[in-house]
Length: 69
Image 1 (cartoon, rainbow, N blue to C red):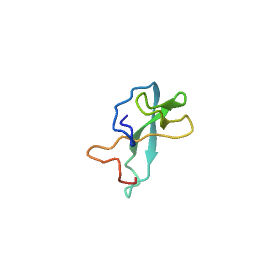
Image 2: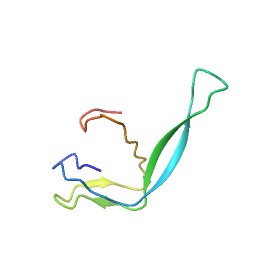
Image 3: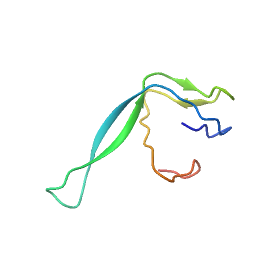
Image 4: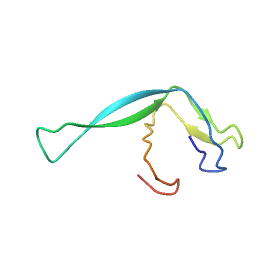
């Protein structure tokens, strides 16, 4: 995961979860891939908090760090 403060890429262990998302079609089931960090992780370069176990992380293709999801 990229640090929002300094831009350093950090790697850490996560648990992969699939959450069901509501759809307009009742017969269609959609799942969203999310990640749950296993412990509190800090950036290796600047020390800022990057991930904690109570927050789910969703990686979206092409999303920038400044956009809110």
